[in-house]
Image (cartoon, rainbow over all chains, first blue to last red; front, top):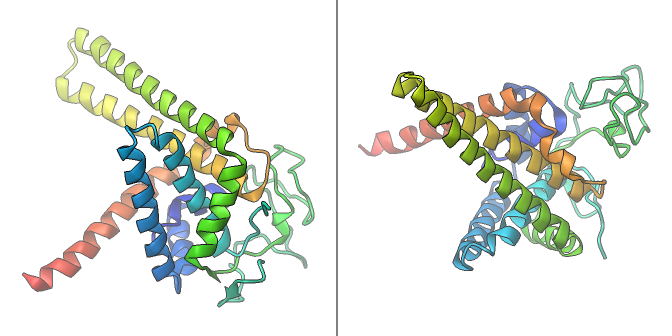
Length: 84
Length: 186
C-alpha cells in the first residue's frame, strides 16, 4: 500500500524513483486502511469487468485508473474537479 | 485543500514548488521557471492549473469520498474514458503484433533465440509501460478538470526510465516484504 502512489508521483511531480518512493511512503502514512479498501474495490470492479465477457473492462479499467488518480490528488491535498 | 480532509503534516516537501517567497516554482514538465499563479507553462504549454503555488501535503482520505468523486467524474466523461481505453488496448495490441513481426525478422537473420526473445520482451515491456504511464497522466488531468486529450497517452517518454526503475524497486521491496513475513514462519 505504501508504494501504491509511486507511479503517480513520478508522473505528476517528475521526480526520480527513489524520491518518488520516499514521497509515496510519506503520503500513504495514516491512509493504509482506506488504500486497502480502494485496492480491494478496484480489484472487485476489474473482476466484474472480466465477467462481462471482457467488454466491461472498457469501462472498468478507466474507472479504476481514474479512482487511483483521484486517490493521489486527495492524498496529496490537491483539488479534484467538482462534478454536480 | 478540500474542507473535509485533514492534513496531518503541514511541512511542505523541500523540493515541492513553493507558494511564495524567494524560491520560484518551476514547470513539472520542462523545468522552466513559471509564475506561482500560472495555469499554463509559457515554455512547453503544460497545464499547471495554478498548482505551482500549492505545496503538496499528506492528507487523510476517506474511501467513500474517493469512490463517490471518481464515479461522478467518470459518469460525466464516460465516452472519453471508454474511448481512450479502447485506443490504449488497440495500441497495446498493435505493439504486440509489431513485436511478433520483429521476432520473425530477427529469427530469419540467424540471431540467437535468447537474444531475440530478450529484445522483443524488453520492447514489449517498454511500449506497454509508456502507454500505461500515458493513460495515468490522462486520468490525472481528467480528475483535475483539465483538458485531457489523446496526446497525453504519448506524453510520458521523459519519465520512462524512472517508471522502469520504480517498477523494479517496487518488485524488490514487495518480495523482501514477503520474505520477511514468511521466513520467521519457516
